[in-house]
Image 1 (cartoon, rainbow, N blue to C red):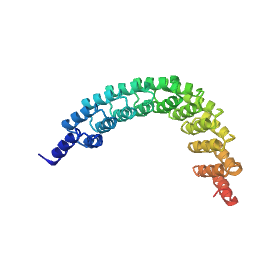
Image 2 (image 1 turned 135 degrees about the vertical axis):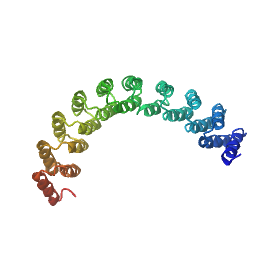
Image 3 (image 1 turned 90 degrees about the vertical axis):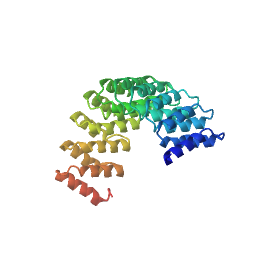
Image 4 (image 1 turned 60 degrees about the horizontal axis):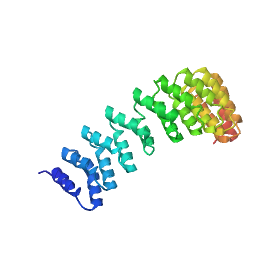
Length: 302
């Protein structure tokens, strides 16, 4: 019997100890023992009367990737203990089979673990996941669920349905939902997304405008450029800074002139600093260099 087998057997014995702390410590340690005996023992530990033992078994099974472990983790989503269900969601997030994905989608209906389910689904872009996230982003009663789902839809940039849903989410009554919908639309490059982000620059909530301006940095057509230049006059300095950062990807003469004006005339020294830094990307413009240098000489930008 080798050393690994001896340690596995010792842990299996510890899972039967009367002390629950010994059992949950043994269950957690078995996560590093991926043989079938360890897996079977952890499956049994998921039925332990002590919730912390079940939690440890769930965490340990995240390292066991066979179908039996997946099935057991899916069943653990019905556990009475919230933390067991959360741990099962996290473990299932590392699995790519259809059973795991279906279970994560179903978990969107669980008020306690739904945010973790959205996070686990975030990098999966098949149509079933897209549809589930769209439903959560637009229809869930919980605003936190809606903005989590909206943010996750940013990864579904090739889906017209996801783009349309995010545009609709920009009309949500909750400020954070609109903010994260704008952020997500930065990854969607079609003209409808651009138009929606330009409209969001007029939102009453400054963080929505901030997110919209930043998102438009990846939309380099003339409409986006003109909208960002206009945003340099926004009453909120963070929105102006965001517009300057976004304009870093736009280097035509209109942008250069707008950044020169911001570097010299904006009332906020941080905005002036950001504008001067952005002008560094306009290395072919002698005027930009001279104006930025003048601002440094003035002592406005340090």
